[in-house]
Amino acid sequence: MQITPMLDLTSILIQIPLVGAFIWFALKLNASHQRTIDKLIADGRVSSLSVMTDWRNYLSKRDEQWLQFLVDQRDSQNRTLDTFAQRLSDLSNVVSDLDQHIRSKQALE
Image 1 (tube, rainbow, N blue to C red):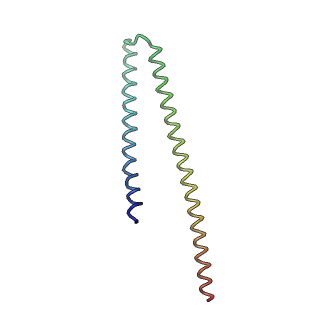
Image 2 (tube, rainbow, N blue to C red; image 1 turned 90 degrees about the vertical axis):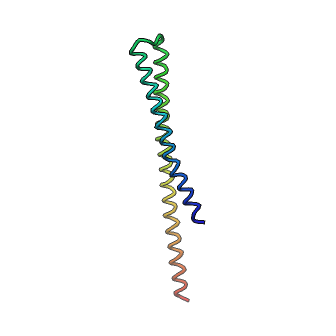
Image 3 (cartoon, rainbow, N blue to C red; image 1 turned 135 degrees about the vertical axis):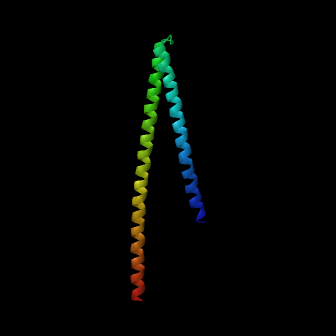
C-alpha cells in the first residue's frame, strides 16, 4: 500500500525532465528558425519583408503568451501548495488537540 504513492511520485519526477527536454527542443527549434529568417532578411533574399516581420511578430507574441502561461501556472500551483500546507497544518493541530484531549480523559479514568 505504501509503494503506490512512491511510484506516483517517481513517475512524476521522471516526467519533469522529459517535459523540460521537450520545451528546450521547441525553443531551440524556434531559435533556429529565427536565425534562418534573420539571415534571409540580412542577405536580401526575402522578397516580402512584411510577411517575415509579421511572422517574427507572431513568434514573439506566441513566446510571450507561453511565458505568461507558465508564470501563471507556477503561481497557481504555488498558491495551491500553500493552501494545502496550511490545511495540513490545521489538521495536524486538530489531531494533536484531540490526542491531548483523549490522553487527559484516559488519565482521569
